[in-house]
Length: 159
Image 1 (cartoon, one colour):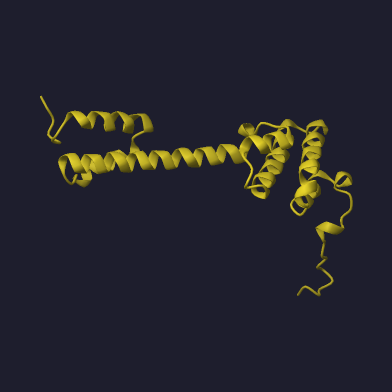
Image 2 (cartoon, helix red, strand yellow):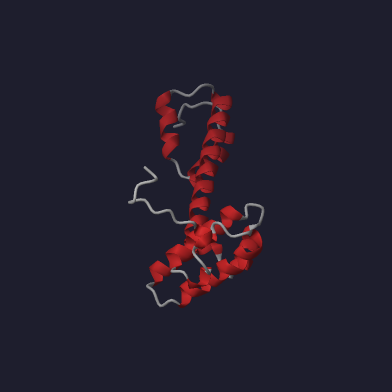
C-alpha cells in the first residue's frame, strides 16, 4: 500500500528552513528539532504567530500548540523556565488550563475520599443513600463537611 502512487512520503527533516515554512508545517517540524535549537525556533514561531495578522483565536491556537510541544519536549523544565524560553505566560494556554482542571479534579476526589473515610471512622459504614450525595458536593462543601464531622458522633439529626 505504501508503494501506491497515491502515497507521498514527507520527511519533516527535509522540508527546509523552519522559518520559511507555513506555520502549520513549522509546528510539525518543531517536534523533531534538537533541544539546542528548538527553544530559539519555538520563540520565533510564537513571535511570527503574534505578528501574522491572523485572527486572535487562530494565533492563540498556534501558541497553544507551540506551548504543548515545548511542555512535552522539556518535561524536566519548570513552568517558569518554559515561559521564559517562549516569552509567554503558560497560564493563558490550553495545556495549562487542562492540566490545572485535571489537578483540581484529582484534589476534589481526594478530599471526597478523605471525608468519606473520616465519616466512616466516626459513625461506621454509611448507607448508600447517604454516600451518593457526597459525589455532588463542591470542594468548599466537602471541606465544610470535613470540619463539621469533628462535631458529631452519629448520623442521627439533632432537633
